[in-house]
Image (cartoon, rainbow, N blue to C red):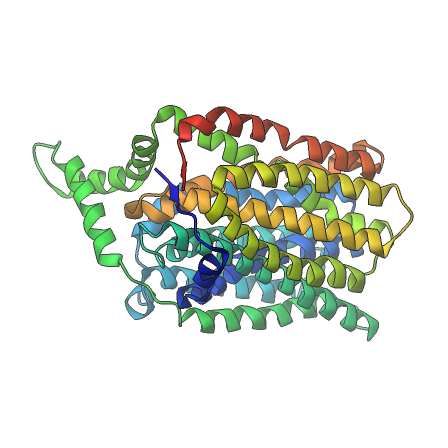
Amino acid sequence: MIEFKRQSLSEMFSIYFDKRMLRILLLGAISGFPWVLIGSSLSLWLKEDGLSRSTIGWAGLIFGVYAFNYLWAPLVDRIQIPFLTKKIGHRRGWIVLMQLVILLSLIIWSIVNPIENLALVISVGLIIAIASATQDITVDALRIEQIGENEGKSMAAGAAMAVVGWWSGYKLGGVLSLFSAEILQTRGFENYWQLTFLILGILVISMNIGLMFVKESGSSERYNQQKENDKLISNKFKNENVLTQFISWIGGTISGPITSFFKKNGFSIAIGILGFVFLFKVGEAFLGRMSIIFYKEIGFSKTDIAIYSKTLGWITTVIFTLLGGLFVIRSGVLKAMFLAGITMACTNLLFSVLAWSDKSELLFAIAVIFDDIAAAFATVAFVAFISLLVDRSYTATQYALLASIGTAGRTTLASSSGALVDWLNGDWGTFFIITAIMVIPSLIILWIMGNKLKLSEK
């Protein structure tokens, strides 16, 4: 049972001043930043080097990695990194290792030409996606473990701060990326994107320094619980040896988190949760995958995009994510997600108006602001929802399972977004109407399973 107790606005807002929220903010930024690299930066790099919309859209298949990171999440939950785990902790050790992989990938990108080495560029992008998806497993676990298991209000606030951090890493990383590329291009550097990736590498190093201030705890309790679950499996064997111990470890690692999830929620509710999570943000993903291409095609420069879509969007996202967190605390997850779904559909229609109008900075700003408001409410409700559902014995695995299923809908389906625009002969207005309709199935599922979830909103 998930409960939210009503408080005064000032009491609820004070929860954001908990020092744990600052750590969660940094973790969110670490998680969001890689999306800049394989999202807007890679898309615009390929676009300005002459590749087609369809090629750029299909390149987005590398995001599909996020949909399957639950497959190796059990290993991340249990395997310790030599040297790093003992020095800085289990969770932080995994994050630092993946950050090093991302840093090396940026160095490789800085020395290649995408036209001559498209396969290499996409392969490196895939490596970044795998590293990012892997670090997300442990970033989310570390974030959840910053909050006590029975601190529902703090968990909702933490979800809001995680979203603020994610969008800060994504938006401000995008600002740095676009401004750097624009400045280097105007100064005559032909390899301005390659140089930009080196600049972004400095940001990766800075975030790892900040990570050392994030505390890690609860490892011993988690290990003990996991060993107990392994023992339940090993007791089924008559004789205990190396083989049976290995089978018990594999069984506990893989089946334990999934069995726990279905046992805790019940089969029908669990299936309903998975269906809703898969479909909820598909329309937003279709829009997001093609948005920067749309902005470029209707005449906005990299600087315009940086100011309106990234900087203005970041400010809007921060404000309304924090407000969204308070809304979740006061009104509950279900109401927040219904409101967010309806708002996402409506804001997508604003992009149709922008597409069918003459170039207008005012319309651009309005569309970006309302899109970010909808995304903020949707994401904070979504994160709070799945964060409260996980079993602390398998934090990383269960959160990764739910998050990756949501990502599966957003990434695998949205990879066809460029092909859809081409099929519509560049009719962006119709494209955005279709993305608005995509939210309806998830809201129907939410409506059907709402009573089964039995959420208590106090």
